[in-house]
Image (cartoon, rainbow, N blue to C red; front, side, top):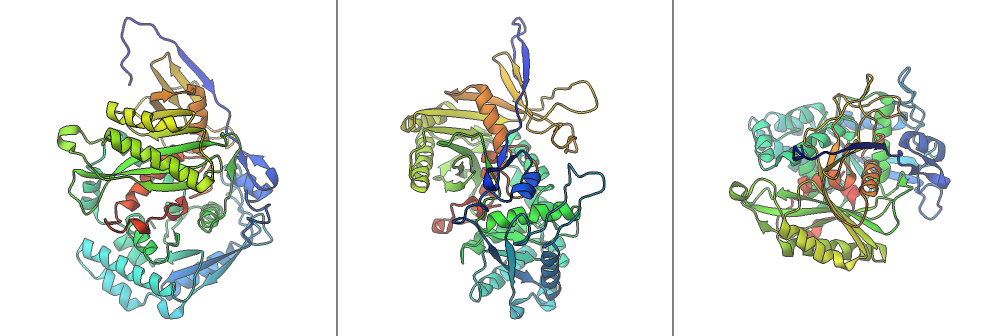
Length: 499
């Protein structure tokens, strides 16, 4: 909570921000991704030069899981009806084929000689040591993928893992996971909880969780052909229509398509999310800086890994902060990448960060921001503050509460009129805009944050709890932490390689 002097009076003001509209094919708009895709098709589907008519999908797994995967993809060519009485929250899936709203078909590719044999699966599941079992699974999948890519060159590759591997190898084990979390500060742990919660509505709960295994395989996989991966691996499934929605939206994006864009964000604004991660092979006090950049309102994203810098969590705290030179260098690299990919300079830069700006850090960002006309540096995270309103439902998504000049709170999750319900399991907690330095109003900053919660193409959910600038950078850090020194040339800039 913000510290407010007891002798000072303050006013609590609230307003409801409009739900951001999404842009689909033929210029159609709708705030709901599923309704917009059903009515208008993908954003890039109406442009002949960008339209994707076929996606080649490779499948790696056992003989049974490969067959099951192909059958399920075939089933999803036609419509899948919604859950009874819940058409607003869980609408029907229109099917994925050249005759459906997606106007795109799937072509599956398999190599019978490269299926995971029962002997190979048994060797993995029979290993008693958690780390060795995990490593064996990674090595086996890695070898199958590299051999597969010598035969085919699919746009997306699906790893159809058998339940035995998914159940026994999805995680490095409880103790190792706890070790990974010890380096996080309170705000970062809160962000991680939101990411994990939102995964339950996306690909993470399509099939049995293989989250840690996924993070390990992805960077190794790109060492070969730099191909985006997706996962088909769970008996803990969502309802059939939701499962299809989330899978095919992610598949379409990974293959190079753009399901939807945003209507209202400024054309030449560069949005950046900054977070930090420990390198898995280094000692605790060496930290890399991870930066995620979303180009424009279309949400095209790139990734930059910053330089290594010393950080001692024992003496300086768990939350890393950039030295002045490192902060300036990181932001300059982001602007240079923006210029390289878009062919123009940004007129405005917005930096989102999940911890406060330290003086040296702030000085470095300000110095680099002189390259553009306008800038905004925003620190936002959750600190346990909640507001309540009359009735059975929590505050509406889009509610902005301002406590005088002391603090601003934005509900990115809450009762959602377009869904007719609050879609979350717990009492929602707003994001607090803890610090803001720059040119724009809190209202504009909040509208942009709300809009960026709708750019999660890892699923077809209505929105996420955090803007994709921070959600994205946290996810990227987990993967980049597995890429050792000297192999930076394997790092792919596109966001679609990391979801």
